[in-house]
Amino acid sequence: MEFLASVSEIMKKAFEQAGYPSDNAGVVISNRPDLCQLQCNGAMALAKSAHKAPFVIAEEVAAALRDLGGEKVFSKIEVVKPGFLNLDAAPSFVAEYLRSMQADEKLGMEKCGPKKIIIDYGGPNVAKPLHVGHLRSAVIGESVKRIARFAGHDVTGDIHMGDWGLQMGLIICELKERKPELVYFDESFTGEYPKEAPFTISELEEIYPTASGKSKEDADYKAEAMACTKKLQDGQRGYRALWDHIMAVSVADMKKNYVNLNVDFDLWNGESTVHDRIPAMVSRLRSEGYAHESEGALVIDVKEETDTKEMPPCMVLKSDGASLYNTTDLATLEMRREQADPDQVIYVVDKRQSLYFEQIFRAAKKSHIVKDETKLDFLGFGTVNGKDGKPYKTREGGVMRLSMLIEQIREAMLKKIIENKENSGDTDIDRAAAEQTANMVALAAIKYGDLSNQASKDYIFDVDRFTSFEGDTGPYILYTMVRIKSILDRYEAQGGKVSDTVLGEAEGEDEIALSLQLTGFAKMAREAFEELAPHKVCAYVYDLANALNRFYHSTRILAESDADRQKRYIALLALTERVFETGIELLGFECPDRM
Ligand code: ARG
Image (cartoon, rainbow, N blue to C red):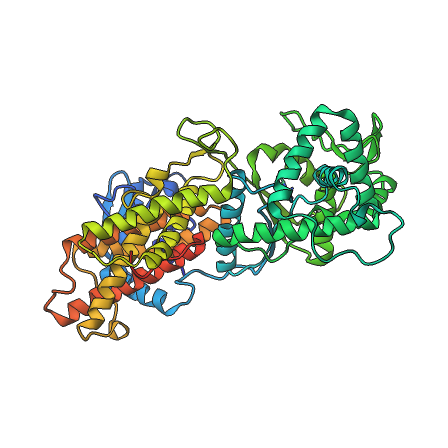
């Protein structure tokens, strides 16, 4: 159970015993931490209906609370004008709660659901290198997936590649120009095509932009590329075989990038996956009257009376009969319903596509491609900017490749780690180990730098700030965790056993604050799921790190001579470490043993 729900139980009883409804009896975190830890404002809401001053009601509730043994839960129960109940949690009650948290694999979070959830994230385009724009979808989607799983849901991640459009036709067209002798272009060929692709990833990455550039200048070339796209989609054998090669080469490269980001997908579906179901879907949309012709195109009207913004119809087929981005997204929703019947589908996509998804969601609901009760969520994210406030570029002004971005942070991190070692007098530096550590910390720097912002906001990718060991950063969180690990290690080296220690009643101010911060975990995790908000996990682990460091600086832990007290400290640190581990697991990165 969540801590606040747990302390609210007795408060509810007190309201009832005093003759009041308990709907507003919830205890919340105090907004005046200088006065009290917790508060209950329920009396204020009752004044009108009870025809009594809120102060009087609060007094009655406080009396009932004491009568019910409320002092076991609250070490302070104070009624203040105009009618608030100011409260402190009793250390014994907090200790009891922390012990129940420790005994629970979910750290007190109640299992909700399970709902069947599909998360659509990543969204890379085949044959184009991953760039900085792909970072956020991967990082946020991965975290939301982990948060939803932790909450107990049945979650499937689908990468939804862009693998079927004109870009494929462009590549085939350009290959045909360069190597017309390839067997793939021989329409009379009936044998088996070679296993080996006729290009490498770097060739592919050069072919695509070249072809794309040409098509913009040369109308005939573009027409040819479109014809290639059509032939591919119509199933021409040689083109399909080439497409298989493009996919294999490209996907292998994507996987490397995603492994570096510690991001993975259960399904590697793409736009092409639903190609075969489009004709039947379109014909149903027509025959059941959901779609109609408009200026030659086939569209579904999605405007609603209450709309204040422009809401154009959702196009299902272009005027030349070709399907488009919309068509594949609708068909994908249809496939997902048939294959998995999800309760919720979450799209983690650039927020500039928000109107597009509004159209898709409405069209899908209206035409019963998805059930009425299926929740469709668009988690739109903002842009990654450079220090100049403009979209992040390379020094030369080109598009920043994701692999280069990761490399940049890795290098900066390695430099820092080696510097730190040198400064601490370490002369015998194991470079390979340092690199491994640097890579782990670098990932935390990137992911935390991204996730600590509310997804919808743009943010500035600032290598210096992200890699700093101080402030609201990934490395600071890891540094704090390593600090705990090292204390626990030294405790064991001194002959202690962490597993023999027991959580007890906190005494000092900083120990109490750390304990209270720990009690907030379950509520935070629930809210992070409900609001699809990894930044809430970041804010929580950051507060936890601050609370831990304050406690560390004010407390003699390993030098404590009272063995029982020391055990209590160690138990608190061990639980803190576990909460941290869970938190960063939800964010999608890991902590090295030392830094
Ligand atoms: N490939 C798309 C792009 O680069 C993103 C795909 C998002 N997901 C989706 N189901 N449409 O813009």
